[in-house]
Image (tube, rainbow, N blue to C red; front, side, top):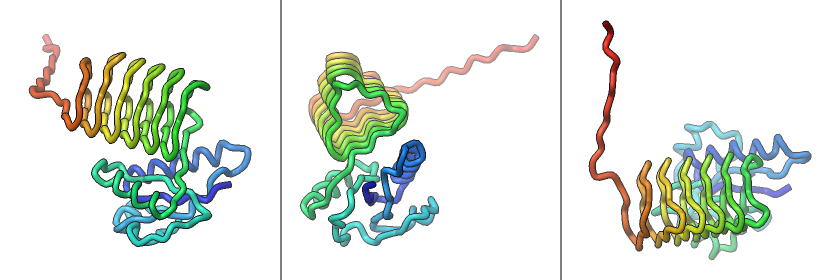
Length: 218
């Protein structure tokens, strides 16, 4: 059984707690012992009513050499800073894979990544360090996802896609097969990426139109 500490106490951390509980409850023996949380505020710790301990300020935290860490922060502007600081301190990061995820035997999941429930990862796909592949997302065969990418729920990534580092893909977005995406990009919810993206680009809908068709009553 591994001791585990979550960095962060917000909604993303709360989801991770649910995953850990599911893993423990559906394993022959308990896999993780969640020691608690570190964060720079206990606001969300109180909000979510966690039963595990609040272990103090994340910036001042002394790394526990007998524990593994998982990043419970969704904010892209903060994630990299925290990762780098904790690696310098000597933290070991755990890769967490929800038991309901369907992952090909030839796929590779790297250190510190989180694979949520009902995710599908195809043959020869590679998921880099510290990525979040959120619930019900699909990563196609032979796709390569770099480091610290946040893939929101229900994202579909086709086969032979290449994605760099530090990208955020919004809910229900999709990337068609063979497309290359660089680094530090933001793809907003519902976007279909049909062509390559470079670095530091934002893909979003310029115009939004809502149509409501109502049947008139005779």
